Amino acid sequence: MDTESTEKAQRGIQSVEVGSEILLALTYSDAPMALKEIAAVTGMPPAKLFPYLVSLIKLELVQRVEPSGDYAPGALALRLGLYGLQRLNPLREAEADVLALASKTGQSVFLTTWGPNGPVVVRQEDPSYPLHLTLRVGTIMSLVNTATGRLFGAYMPEPLVRKALEDEHIRLSGATELRAADKAQLFRDYEQIRAEGMTRTDGNPLPGVNAIAAPVFMFNGAIALAITLVGPSGTFDTRADADLAVTLRQTAKDLSFRLGYALPHAGANRI
Image (tube, rainbow, N blue to C red; front, side):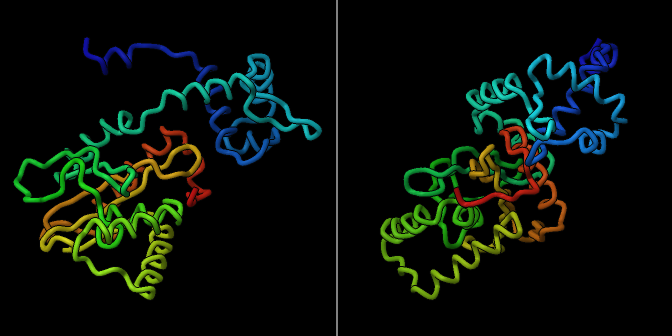
């Protein structure tokens, strides 16, 4: 019997699954929730919902907050959350996503994190067709003219970004330092990137090569990784509503959720 058949044959405990829906509703809320609010989110009548809450309170998975009597995650839920956060490894968590994204899109996939000198590539998965790039693991990405670097420029704390821009000018010998007006425009571009939630480049800095990048967030809203798709400009559509961008953003969103970023409606900030 294969794995899929085995999973279909296995019976779960429905009450446990219902309890998890209640806990999920509480984790998505910015504040303790009233009984009727939980009922509205879960689609359960209050009379059916209340006994589940009683049991979850006994297990310390839920608590009642005084003086309102509203419901919030309990002590055990918080301990489980802290345990999970301590074990999180964004790169390890992203490995399967990188492989799946490369297979689904047929494009090169890069993972980038923030290093001592700025955004640095830490993982790449190449497509089956040849794409001649100088981009490799260990490459430091420009904050000015690459999709990946501009994404980090948008989400990293501004003092770190300004320092990295200075280091970039020094590192790239012969590069012209950004004028004050150009730097001001760059930071306005960063604001637009935060509003759109992704960034793109068409034939820049490499002619004939396009790229799109989306952020992966940690539980506190800080950017953990950038996922970047790179491909030939003739077949690579960088529009925000194109299939590549939609797939990329969904992958980044799913990974962010697994890293504890449970409030996507709140937006990420410079931390």
